[in-house]
Structures are given as structure tokens and as C-alpha cells.
Image (cartoon, rainbow, N blue to C red; front, side):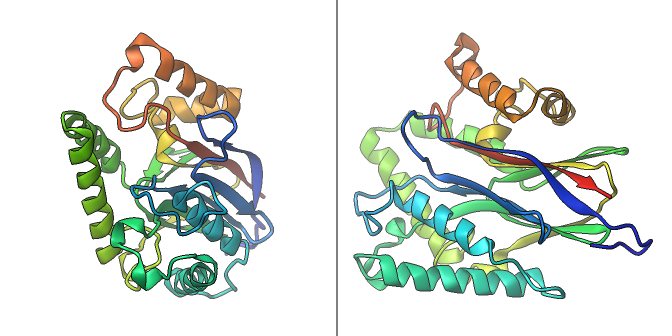
Length: 282
């Protein structure tokens, strides 16, 4: 992948992690990459809020859609593809797969039973990377200019506020709220899902890249170290990542969750955490 100065740049995938937070489970996150194509991604399936099991071969509908999307993203874009056109194809193929594999026809499923996922996807193109994202997955990029965040950081604060409100509800009220929120997300296409209007809501960002830049794509589970736990800043997380690696960050996350300081309102005490840590190489 050559930039305008003739410098070939490529992805060096340093490490990946997919920690479900529960022993013996695969979890609802997926992380993947194709270094040759210059692509990498993290996906976070939204926890099921229904007793229906349209994809019984998987741990959950959330796990099914994260796995299906990750598998399809291994078929990368062609040179010159627009991200929106590429994701229109990806989502159409995942929908077709869902129609073939579901034991309940998709048009018979209530909106709360249709699986969705947050995600962030990166494509290195010459001297530039394009990021496509929906929901609360993030990317941190460390360069000579400092650390930059790409994603919807405000969603971490929103989730904490939502958790406070929900923990005051009865279990029945809580589930009713979650189901209504899932129906609405599927109706307006605010996450990667099986509906027809998702592509129009894709968020994209482009960023100039240089050899030596570091990138960490992460689900909100790992971003919790920054918000709400505040054990790290953007800068210190990337510094620790470079010095100690992803496994050390996961240990820090799980240790904090079990500590007295970890009693911060949240819907899931131990959420899935996934990430891809990579460097831009000449």
C-alpha cells in the first residue's frame, strides 16, 4: 500500500484479545484482521433481550451476528470501493445468511429478537486510514502528535447514566426498557444489524497515517478503563499497551471490576472486552 511519497505502508498486527469475562464462554465480541488487505475490526454483539433463540447453534443471537459479520469482513473491499458500498454488500450477505440459518423467519421475529452489534472497522489505504463505526466501539491512534480517539465516546457516559436508572427498576421493568430500546435500534438502524436502513447511518472518519503510528481498536468493555473506571486516560492506556501489552490491560480491567473501587453502576459487572493492537509499518 503506497502513499503519495512512494512509501509502502502496511499493518503489523501486534496482538488481539477477545475476553468474554466468563470462563468457558466464547462471548459476544469478535476481533479480526486481514493484514494483507490492510483491514482490522472489532465487533460487540448486543446482549440478547429475548428468550427466543433464532440461532440456537450459537451461544446467543449477539454471538451469531458478531461471528457472521467477522467472517464476512474477511472478504475485504476491492481497491476503489467506497466504504458505504462495501458495507451495503457485507450487510446484505449477513442478512442472507441469517435468512438461511434462522429457525424462526426473520419477518416473524419481534424487533427485540433481531440481533445487532456495535463495531469499528479500519482500512489502511496508502497514507490514509478510513474508519467505519457504529455504536460504542472505539479506536485510539497514537502518533507523534499525541493520542486521538475515533468513535462515539459519549456513549460510555450514556451507558453509565442508563445503568443508574435501570438499577432502580424492577427486573420486569428493566427488561421492558431493554426490549423497547432494541426494537427502536432495529427500526432506525443505529447498529450493525439485519434491517434495510443500516448503511445510511454508518459513521466514517479518515485519518492520515505515518509509519510508527499505533492503533488500538476496542470494544466498550476495554474502553471502560477510561470511562467510567478512570484507571487510564487515552494517553496512559496507549502507553501501557505499548509497554505491557493487551493481556496486562485485560488483567487490570478484571482486577478493577473485583476491587472495592469497582462498584460503579453498570448493567453487566464483567462485560466482554476485545481489541486489536497494531502498528503502521513502512
